[in-house]
Image 1 (cartoon, rainbow, N blue to C red):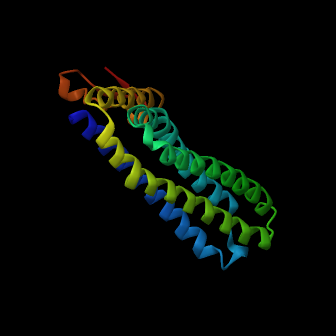
Image 2: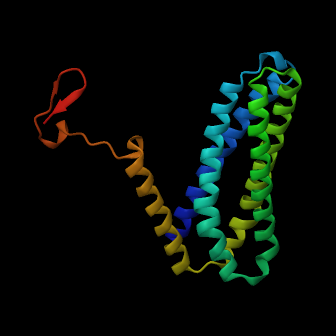
Length: 196
């Protein structure tokens, strides 16, 4: 059961992080919706990209690829829940396409497009929140009931492999080494390089 706890804790932490991204974006969008002339499409695009990169990657790699198949295999009565989650994902994808179209139009500084952009982003975020709620309130409790210990171990292994893959491609996720504390002679050379 330790592996199940790891998987559920990982998902919970990432869901909270996603909720934080959503809240931050919604706060910004709602505050500028009344002042469309102040909309900065470049800033909104960067914030939206940060949110969607994290949210969609988390959902696709962990929920859709690992957790949903395990639940589907363990409980044949979960079809409605899985279908709801898949529908929310497809709807979110369509909304995201609409948001990107609105962003391109808002780049031309159209006030009416700015208001529409804000509304479309709001709808997209609401869809993400619905999907998160369904995961947290229905999918995860069901998974806890129906997935075997062996299957939790497999899911945990997949999560760890994904984490290792992330660390390999993102230097900021790699563990830091304290070379000086390991008995090595470390000294700075030039402005940015280290010599051992």
